[in-house]
Length: 213
Image (cartoon, rainbow, N blue to C red; front, side, top):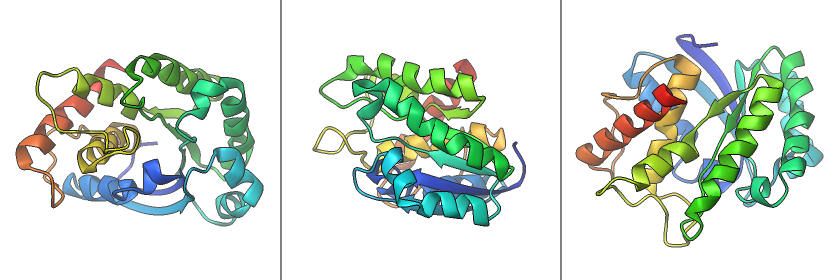
């Protein structure tokens, strides 16, 4: 799927909307000479099932041209009920294929107080990704790698769940190898509020995660 100009529909909740992850991806891509057109369907705390039932996501998948559709599940559902999570993703698989787009899964991170749950989160995303031949964006694994470093930017916001700007930037970096076959390492875009040194570290972590994924 990698190409210079990509149109992507993001479907999720605050883990995608906070700090405008699609916008961060677009800015990083632009710094590498690529163009990302994007749209976001988001509702606070929403599951993929809620988006499906509402109908807006399905209508936009069917009525507009997309190269990829990114799904982000409610953050703890893959842990509480992986079967339901997989069923939710399957709802979207057929319509996305029928529209000629690729399905991509935004695999998110464990909560600050439960880091060991990252294994189950990652497994849940990889399992359904393998079943459906979907792309998987390994944001949670990149978070795990960054959090293991002796010094790293704060990724979790004060609630221990949502991302800080650094956390969202790290997630955004993980999209470049998936959507554009492009390493984020050395990308010029550093958003206001993030230091150049922190951005460089996060880029390297995302690039290393992609190379070992």
